Image 1: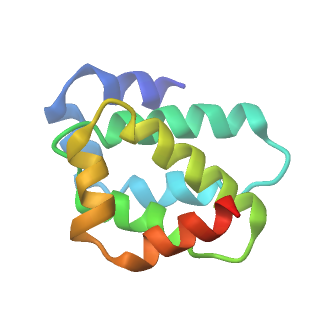
Image 2: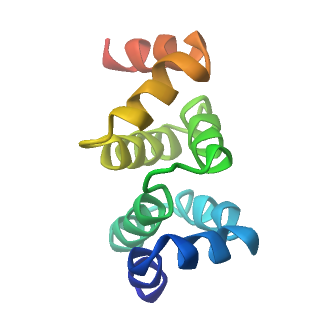
Length: 112
């Protein structure tokens, strides 16, 4: 929770955390089963990490998780994408235009 709060303070703090490669360990925490509380904290930290301007490597890591076959990881990655894209046209645009059609196809398939 502390990291989530630190990331919320400023973009310069966020950039410092990104420079120390914190995104990958956070995403790894999303794969721990049966840890809803941890997932919520990690999602908050990632959402704070992904405030505009969004670091493209973080978004790409989340999208990689959406493409996985582990249902729990996919679910958590989708929730995190939903959380960080709320009220952010830039992030929605990155997810729909700049990355690829594969993500949209995967999200559509998940809804069916």
